[in-house]
Amino acid sequence: MKEKEEELLLNSLKRIAPGTDLRAGIEYILQGKTGALIVIGDSEQVLKLVDGGFYIGCSFTPAKFYELAKMDGAIILSQDASRILYANTHLFPNPQIKTSETGTRHRTAERVGKQTKTLVISISQKRDVVAIFIDTIKYVLEEPRVVLSKASQALQTLSKYKESLDYLLVNLTIRELEDMVTLYDVTSVLQRASIVGKTEKEVRKYIYELGTDGRLLNMQVQELMVNVADESLKIIEDYKNFGDKIKPIELKNKISLLNADALLDLSSTARILGYKVEENLKEFSVHSKGIRIITEINRLPEALLKSLLGKFGNLKNILNASAEELADVPGMGRTRAGLLFDKMKKFSEYYLYNEPYNHKGEIIPKLRF
Image (tube, rainbow, N blue to C red; front, side, top):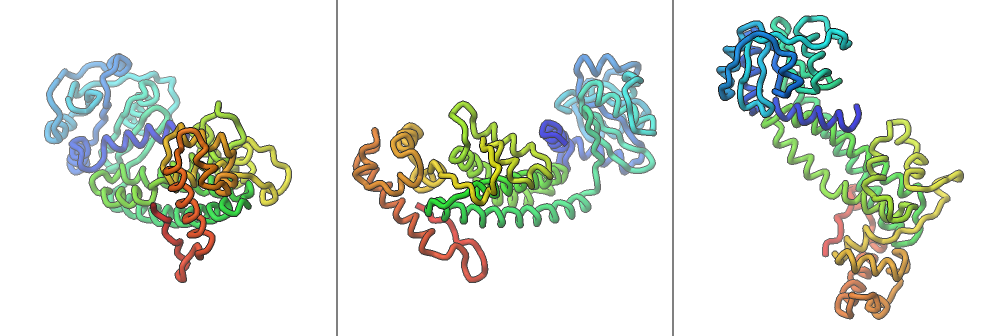
């Protein structure tokens, strides 16, 4: 599923998640075994397909929604689902639109979703199946207990991937301080960060489907994903082999769009960063500009950071600079230069002269300033 389709699906799941009035109405219909066809949207494209029925124009409540669903026709809601506009209507989408569905209600729902790109919900009368259609997307809702089980498994997977990413980040930091970074180190981190991002989207889908029942899971995901995207962007900025014309976010998006096979091939990520590598990535040395580490050590104003990088060129030269040399950077000043020098020394000693992992194999916590 493409990124835009994923976003469209997630937004749709939010709208019908447990805890919303719309989901409560859907549950009433499932319990009453009446079935329903619901279109959420009142655009001109939708209204052109509507024939018959009658105008309601009342505010939405689950009880009213359920009573109107007892009639055979479709229900049309406003775009924000706050009002019930029409009930017992017939929908006439283009019959030439291909559909893989068999039942009349589901076939109509799929065609309306494709033709109008509007969220359409089809509730089966006999099978208790709730399917949503929007554009080319079809998604069948599952019982909350099933979704919760899948979400828990996906969260465990995300946690393992994040732990692996943390290991790689610590190793990258140490190798940067030693000026021994290879393209393999960089692409390995970006590959794992992309996998973490893809796994997070999978967990988010379940969380949105769970609605209020997924609040605890959402808190866990937020904690796991702190700074992941920001770290990736800074690493890309440190190592991209392009000028300033191409922004890190553009390259990050390209990496996230790689399919599973391309993502496993680290040379694909290297090419996105602007490297034409024919040799082994482990033998291809690269040098960090120092953006990630310097911003972690000391939050400098953007203009000052740019001046610092402009004067010294890369992290190795910055780390080897004296306090007096740092003070020569326009806008730095002696006080700030001395503070930066001391923090860089402390940071280097912390990572280079301590074991990166404790006796349990856990990553040592980051040094906080």
